[in-house]
Amino acid sequence: MSEVLVVVEATREFGVKKVTLEMLTLARELGTPSAVVLGGAGAAEALSAKLGEYGAQKIYAAESEEIDGYLVAPKATVLAELVNRVQPAAVLLASAQEGKEIAARLAVKLDNGILTDVVGLDADGTATQVAFAGSTIVKSKVTKGLPLVTLRPNSVNPTPAPATPAVEQLTVSVTDTDKLAKVVDRVAEQKGSRPELTEAGVVVSGGRGVGNADNFKLVEELADLLGGAVGASRAAVDSGFYPHQFQVGQTGKTVSPQLYVALGISGAIQHRAGMQTSKTIVAVNKDGEAPIFELADFGVVGDLFKVVPQAAEEIRKRK
Ligand SMILES: Cc1cc2nc3c(=O)[nH]c(=O)nc-3n(C[C@H](O)[C@H](O)[C@H](O)COP(=O)(O)OP(=O)(O)OC[C@H]3O[C@@H](n4cnc5c(N)ncnc54)[C@H](O)[C@@H]3O)c2cc1C
Image (cartoon, rainbow, N blue to C red; front, side):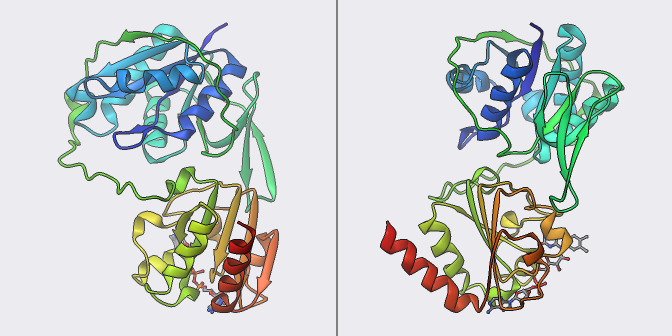
């Protein structure tokens, strides 16, 4: 069986991200999964146990200051060389900021088609995407080159399939043009008690209707009761209620949790773009005409300051 390259998404603080485990699970349906770690010295060693647990048969490690110290261009160069050498059946990357940037550059380098924000991929390369606020399922195939796909987090249920991967170190040779954008600083993500927004199974988001930064405690309280992450609409972020890193939508993060709770959010198209593939959507809005109700599986027309404390009390009782 041909190899399927899975480009590892990981952070220094949290290790291998769940979307990587999803990609490894998906890759097993398509061929033999090989993980590609692009990072600084020792990056692959720190991640190899987890990657093996989810079926990586091999780990390609590109570890150097040139990979770690610059933005995505050197990573795309190294990957293009690897793809040309091993001729994999498919290449999977995460539908996250870096994954999409690398995928786009890789597609140009390989003169290959690309499919982004995919939620499923069949063995014959047919990808599934969701469009128009979840109302349309699109089936597409790359017609030029191999399936080069970015997978939207929370699309696949990750299941372990223990393997003992062999590690192959890649030679990194990048050009000067790959080194035009240098990393000058890294700020560690706060490792709070809540799950990471794009990986969370439950997301509770607040919008302008939450009213002010202090009231966001209500959103946080519900998120904590449900073991979820907190999100925010752009209007809430722009109003200074919550930090930008938690913004959901077209110009924020894309989430696809099992449960998405929208509190005081109208449901503008740009917000929907970031949450419409959530499995179950619950909306609380005092305006029964708010567009969010077109999308919601369950809707409460009411004042969030009355509804949320009642919901929280009920959840507490059942815990
Ligand atoms: C290029 C571009 C990119 C954008 N990117 C994003 C993006 O990434 N993410 C994003 O979210 N938006 C984005 N937007 C903005 C988007 O168009 C909307 O303006 C924004 O989503 C509105 O946020 P909101 O729903 O919180 O606020 P509003 O539209 O003001 O809605 C607030 C809602 O709260 C309800 N409400 C008020 N008080 C209560 C209460 N007490 N109880 C219950 N309900 C209450 C109201 O009925 C209303 O429906 C973008 C816009 C542009 C042009």
